[in-house]
Length: 180
Ligand code: IMP
Ligand code: MG
Image (cartoon, rainbow, N blue to C red; front, top):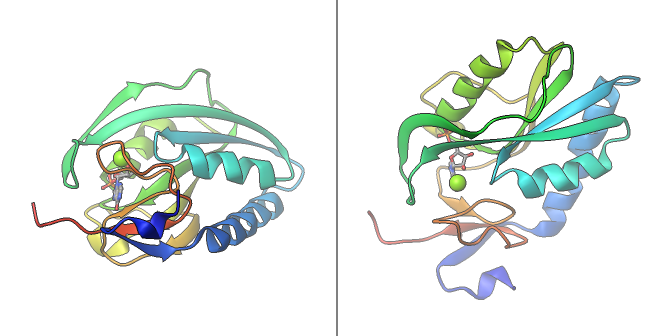
């Protein structure tokens, strides 16, 4: 569906730019873990499209798993509370784990997940995020691999949703809504 035709959507990052950047991030990961296996953990549901594209560009032995957490209600505001809705299928002990996120916003989700995953003794633990909104940070966390740093706007597309909608947009778009 052509994203820009929706009246309240404004394209921020075009799909061609996303594709190029995802390939660059994958090259970086491939270099950093030369000769080793990486275990990608996607944070559902937002990261599923980023992870799918990223893993196919990584030229290493890989495995994938998913974890689902909920920190947001149906709207734009974080509730600040993180819950695990679906845990990992298998142990990460001794693995090179890359946690794959759609977006780093307040950092509450990531700091919680890093705490949980560190307890499980991975060999290494890094973070790849398609988008970073550093201006909204409440917890001091950072990604090791960042696709794009963006301004303080609510965005949808390429996996990111608003009330479960818009994940299928190929571009990342700013969603304009009346103030809540
Ligand atoms: P954090 O815990 O505030 O860092 O939020 C992380 C999660 O909130 C992300 O994984 C997204 O699911 C969601 N989120 C944060 N900002 C946006 C946005 O601009 N659009 C859509 N989802 C967002
Ligand atoms: Mg979401």
